[in-house]
Length: 188
Length: 169
Image (cartoon, rainbow over all chains, first blue to last red; front, side, top):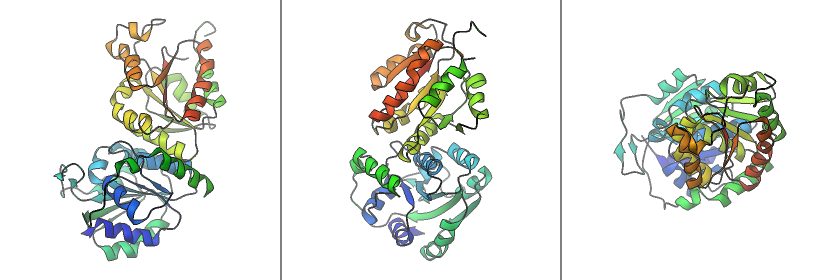
């Protein structure tokens, strides 16, 4: 099991110019751990991160898109696995932070917590490659390969809450930051 | 077909005029046979089929953030099903999601609010409450507003709904 913020810090050290879509707690943490104009946090409704990321990946096939989804979020949009696999964007990396609960909404367990494998669902849907990662050293070692793989790639990250970071929902959905993102992406 | 009031080709031409490259869609019985299948067959358009309508709202938003123009085709039932994504992403998030909504079962030349079909009757009032502008398309002559409506949505970064009141052929 990894601390989620440590997992994100490890990613940040290896990040180059990827677009990063993050949802809920991962998004709150990412804005503190690695402020970057190519952070996309404007998902607006639960479960929608993977679909925003698909739009970005299709719209900019030259840019790698990494999404840090949640397990509860993905359960709300499971059909997106099929939609994404059907489009088969080569530049799409779908990471799911599996903590087994709706952390933002009171840490109530998700249905079938710990009893199902998200990577199996993704593989069955048609993702090209899947990973299941439970510890930080494995994440650090496999990340270069994951970022180089032809997508769509799916990665289950077994995580738990780490250090607490201040929540700022208006920042996550800010139109001003969204416009900064668009401009930064247009330049890159 | 010469006397039929609404041609699928006219709508397609308006998409082209508005610079649409991506069409996100979940089959709608009003538009699937002639319009959607025609778009799928046309290499000028990239059709992205979704499993659920809320996905489409977000895919269009991601495409916009990536500098692309898209429309999202769905049936009114899908519009009703994706209200929270429309609220959170398109309205509160100020994304220019252009929804092409088929009003299945609407009686020809009857205003949607006067329809006997409950689901159709409530669409425009819901859009009004959400502050989303809407435009009814029933005839070829209505179609000239499609491209300007789409361009305006992108210029203002706000959602819009184009309601298809009869099957385009």
